[in-house]
Each structure stands twice: as C-alpha cells, then as structure tokens.
Length: 210
Image 1: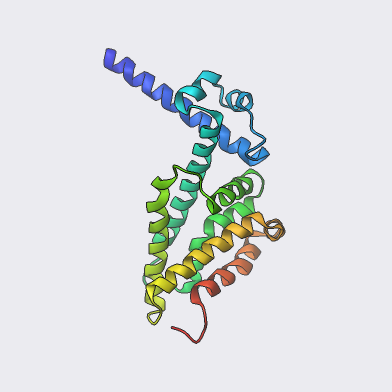
Image 2: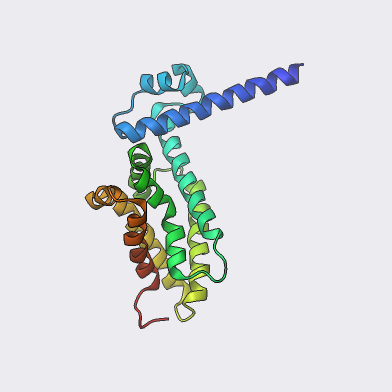
C-alpha cells in the first residue's frame, strides 16, 4: 500500500511538472521570455507557486527547461524525418525531411510558429546547462552527413558537416527574420516548393563539386 501511494505521488508530481512545462512553452510563445510571469504560468497549469520552486527552483529555470524541451522535440522530429528516408532518397528528399518540422510550424502559424521562433532565438546562443542536447545535435548532423555522403561521394565529411550547420542556421534565421512571416502566409505546398530547393542547394553546394 505504501509503495502504491508513493507511485501515485510520483505520477502526480510528474503530471504537475509536465503541466508547468506545457504552460511555460505556450506562454513563452505568446509573450516571449520577458513577458511570462510566475502567476500566469501557475494559473495556466492549475498549479501553485510552490510547485515551480519544488520542480524547477525558479521561473527562469522553468522557462529554460520549457525551451529546452521544445528544442528537443524539434530535434527528435527532424531526426525521425531523416531516418524515414531510404537509400534511394535524393538530396531534395533529404532537404524536405530536414526542413519538415520548420515547414509544419510555418504552415500552422500561431503558437506553433512562435515556439519555433523562441527555440531558434535561444538555439543561436544556448544557455548554460544545455550540454545534454549536444549528442542530439551531433546525431542530427551525422545522420544528414551520412546520407549526403552517399549522394556526394567526392565531398569530404567535414565540408558536408559545415553545409549541414549552415542549413540549420538558415532555418533559424528564417524563423526569426521578416521573410519567415512572409513565407508563413503561403499555403503548405508553396512553402515546400519555395523552401526545399534552397536547403537542397545548401546541401549540394557547387554543381561542379561532387
């Protein structure tokens, strides 16, 4: 019985923690990092102020954890999309898979795009303590480089890694720049038609190489 009660407490604690993270992500998307208040987060999550202190220590730590969580979900979606490709996939297919989470956010607009913008902003200069995502960043790049190597056997892996990082930076810039809002107003098919060739070009590099 004591074990069952302990399990129930852990489950309730996890639900509260997850609720606080979800509330913080949504409010960050609406108001930005400087516009989120502790009271608003707890009201939105149906929790009390002491829960934030217990699970995260402070509002700032909660917001950092929420953005990290959103970034991890973005990377997971990117990794899964690339992993779904087979050996016959071309560079355009790879660019579409790599870009898919961004295209979905652009097409959805609203909070989804706002979350991506928040992630892109902090992704350019990650806070301390995000080292645990280093392996996931590396996996995402390595998966791309491995598939690019099959299509571009004449290009060294170091250069392919550079191209991949440039492509990722382009997506971050797109999320934050006015042109991103311009693209978001387009139908999903047009977003893909315009954006995928740009990323494919970044991956392919000079047509005289590879």
